[in-house]
Amino acid sequence: MTNQVPEVYTLGVKDFKLPEKVRRFVVPGILVFAVLLFAGGLYFRNQSLIFSPQIPAGEEEGGVAGVRTSIPQNFPQDIPLFEPVEIVSSLESQERIQITLQTDSATERVLQFYQRRMKDLGWRLTGRGEDNGILTFLKNDRRAQLVITSEPEGPTLIILSVTP
Image (cartoon, rainbow, N blue to C red; front, side, top):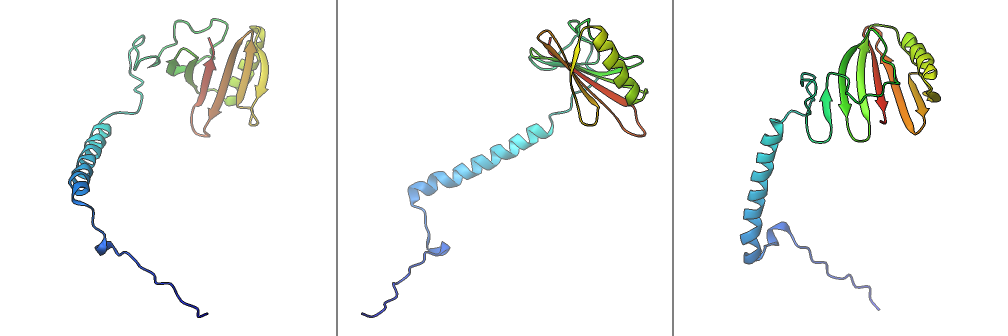
């Protein structure tokens, strides 16, 4: 027996042709897709994806949730707010309420305030982040989580998330 090498056939790009029926739909389809993609890009480029903190109190941005610069009316009365603070934003949905506060006080002072006051109001500390800037509290079937952070040359941010 002789070793025979099988013949190999290659199909180059220049040899490849779409049938006429397919070409009638593919080329216009690609053009329509490109136009839609371009138009969509122009539309979304003009849309703002940043929440504006200037939404008047009580007005919602969007459907279920809204960003505000005031404390929601149904914010739990048994959760203290550190003072002095400035309300940066508040977000309310069916699942939770989240407020972001800003203060010039030191992070450690804010942490001590929340540990003491939450305990006084019946909340139980159930978790503390590794860097001690995250506190989780439980009371009955509700959960409150605080994230307290600051930059060396900036204000301290307090992000408070509560399940109503």
